[in-house]
Amino acid sequence: MTKRDYYEILGVSRTAQQEEIKRAYRKLAVKYHPDKNPGDASSEASFKELAEAYDIISDADKRAAYDRYGHAAFQGAGGRGAAGGFHDPFDLFREMFAGQGGKAGMGGMGGGIFEQFFQGGAEASSRDGKQRGADLRYDLQITLEEAFSGCEKEIEIQKLDACQTCDGSGAAPGAKTASCSLCQGRGQVAMSRGFFQVVQTCPQCHGAGQVIDKPCQNCRGEGCEERVSRITLKIPAGIDEGARLRSSGSGEAGIRGGGKGDLYVIIHLKKHSVFEREGMNLHCQIPIPFSIAALGGEVKVPTLCGLVDLKIVSGTQSGSTFSIRGSGMPSLQSPRKGDLYVRVEVEVPTKLNAEQRQALEKFSQLCGEENTPLHRSFTERLKDFLSN
Ligand SMILES: [Zn+2]
Ligand SMILES: [Zn+2]
Figure 1 (cartoon, helix red, strand yellow):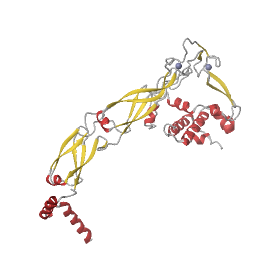
Figure 2: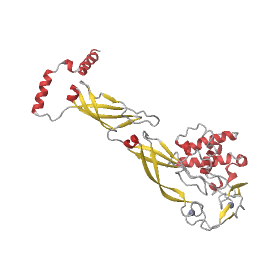
Figure 3: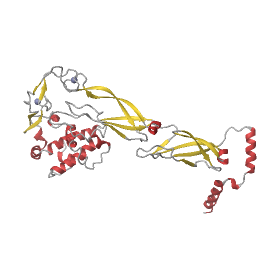
Figure 4: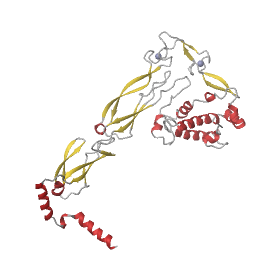
């Protein structure tokens, strides 16, 4: 397979300036990030391809070599095994979006959830090998009743947590730290990649400059281990489908003393057997006997706080909607509540016995035009239609 041109991948011209290249990378990186395209292998491939292109074009030396020799510039001694010759695409992405944290967010990139995931990642990774723990996402299903009154939920998630054996230090009991032998404590090593020397984070101490002589056996010195954790979440009353809650510090543990990631909980509402929700309002349908529709009366209507009486005016037609103020969902921001809309369906009686049939036949004989307003207006319209 021929490799695509790096400039083409980034969508910039060969004369593009640093700022433009950076902007192009950021835009595309967000678009192709696997978190945004779960399970889509082609996006992931694009994401990696993009990282590689950016790694080269954003570096003046590498760019000059690429301009001169093309892809051949990077197929020398380091060889083609060289996905490793480039940055880890995820590290690159994090570096790009870390540091941005406090400032202008991600500069109007409109990433939604995604945007949030990378904010506050100021210490995403740093020179001394500390790495902030990953943010996690959890999809939580709750009932409409739970969304109505608010609730507490305990969830279990499997994640990287501080190692219990070494308490997160990564050191075995009695271990000593010593300067790293590979980088002599500098945390970085120079490697040759084709035509150049590239300075990389030391693979032995991961940039810390120091190594522990006896790493914790349980976590192999990483300071964290995979564990099932229980987390209690407070779900506020009024929460709606798709809402996102952040549980700060409940994400994965950082590596080598880096901060914890956050947990993002995405709320999903289970379908309710009686109510349908539309923002703060609720809708339901109830059948009413045709005698009540004709005579008027009261019927019991369900709300999320129990049954209430609803007055049906005489002459109510099937499909009419009544609203019950304040019987909808609570608001997240104010004490206001939405309304409940009740649509009535007039039920035609079935399985009439002889006596009922007689009574209805009698009733029918007593009916005149004034009793059937819908029929009257329909006849009018029909006449118009037929005369045209
Ligand atoms: Zn440990
Ligand atoms: Zn080292």
